[in-house]
Image 1 (spheres, rainbow, N blue to C red):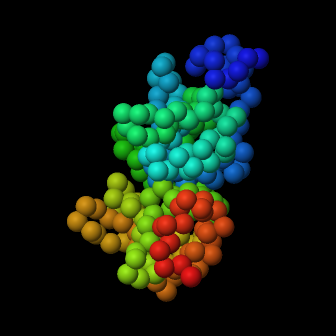
Image 2 (spheres, rainbow, N blue to C red; image 1 turned 60 degrees about the vertical axis):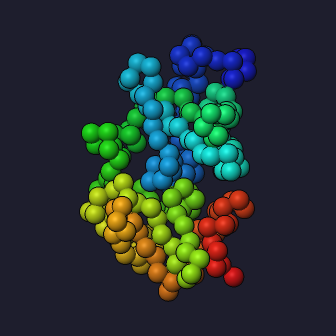
Length: 212
């Protein structure tokens, strides 16, 4: 088989690659984290199945290539630099397994939190990826937030419940004028840090401004 970078999306070779694909446990865990954050799905040309798309600004190049390393067997070509957007992007092969995740996390083209999120969001790397995508540390106190504005109040409450049940981290939801976001208070910060810091990339350590 020739170089993957030279393959078109729907050749016999790509169909053979697709038939041999299944997510590993780590790939599923990383996928869950980025679905909650910045990751998105795009339809294939036949509008039958979906592929995962990862895109981040040029200052997060390391992060994109880390994702690429995780999902490399699902990808035909390395991340590309989009000069006009000043970002890096790659897309996976479209696949029924990705379509299942799309159907679980989207209703009427809107991202939602599925009722069984507690069975999906349990690995520390999922929490770390979600934080690297959408989390932030406050510089005035040792607390953290997740930008969950796109989710409903009920969805946010469900995520708060899972954070406590699966990770032992207590959090609350705040309305900040743009929508609801999840707030992890300072008294829970050390516990939260101990869970996710082993998985945080060096270039993302800026999100922990007050970590000793």
